[in-house]
Length: 99
Image 1 (cartoon, rainbow, N blue to C red):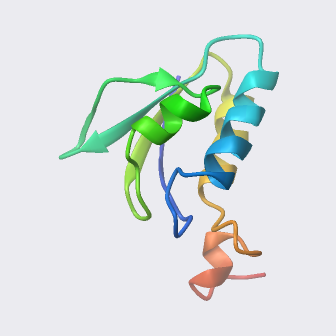
Image 2 (spheres, rainbow, N blue to C red):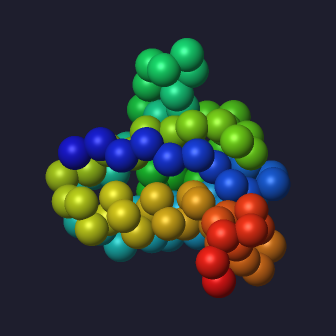
């Protein structure tokens, strides 16, 4: 299964957002991969449970990434983390959405 999501964190996948994502991915027993999307194509995936791998993607605020796992629940959880700006409010609220 795949899911694409746009990174909401102002710092992209760096430091705290990468650590939160890696921690969540590590709790899942199966493989979880993430790849940066450029021009509509997913690049080389890395292990989503690796902070160094996540930071090596060079994914910034507004970039799209593709998550891959065999369980939709973990994809939903990770997508939610990526859609959070990590500044205290989910991305939808920062854009004037409900909340």
